[in-house]
Structures are given as C-alpha cells and as structure tokens.
Length: 81
Image 1 (cartoon, rainbow, N blue to C red):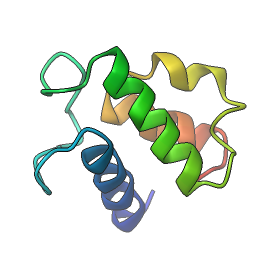
Image 2 (spheres, rainbow, N blue to C red):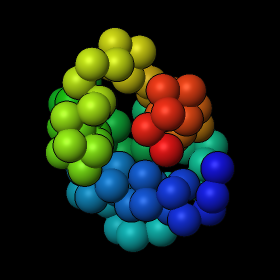
Image 3 (cartoon, rainbow, N blue to C red):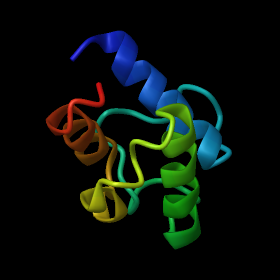
Image 4 (cartoon, rainbow, N blue to C red):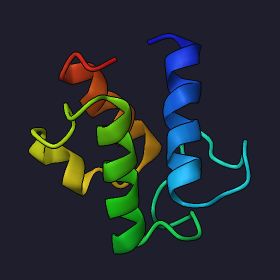
C-alpha cells in the first residue's frame, strides 16, 4: 500500500475524531486515542464512507475495526485502496 493512501486514511480519521493533524500513527487504536469511542467510531465510518463514495457501508468488518492498522487492512482486502 502506498504511503500516500495510508496518510490520506489517517488524515480522514483525524478529522473525524477532531484531532490535530499528524497525531495518529499506524499503530494508533481506540484504546490509545482520545475521542475514539463508539461515537468516534461512527464518525470514522461515516467519513470513510463519504470519501469512498458509499463503498464502506457494505463492509461489515469495518464496524469492529478499532485501529488504524485494522482499517487499512480491511480497506486493502476489499480492494478499496
């Protein structure tokens, strides 16, 4: 996966969680990230779904993706990125 894709996904997540740019790392997850609770998870899913034009809502695994790495893996496995 290209670093540009990874950076864009992390930027989308940061905006969804109202975080400072650059705060997320590839190993960031819901336990270590402020605001990444159930509402934050929903905000991430909505932001990603909007960015990828509705392709995220059909991927059930995304609801349980509680880390940047899991999100990136699921997007790659489903040929989104």
